[in-house]
Picture (cartoon, rainbow, N blue to C red):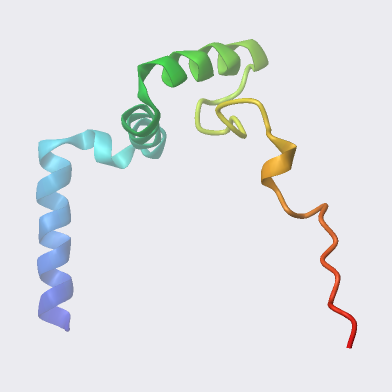
Length: 81
């Protein structure tokens, strides 16, 4: 196990030497968001974060909240015995 951890640490150091952006969690989050949701959603979120004065990743959601998506307000009844 010690050898495995040493190998992983070595791989991590090599990756960071090749691309130091790996140390910036916000930059990685932005790249993941852009790859997942596309350029249009990226630019919309960028405008919203500038408008609200918060970090890109700290913005709570990328679009309007759809209250119908969440089942927290639904009361589930058990069938009568």
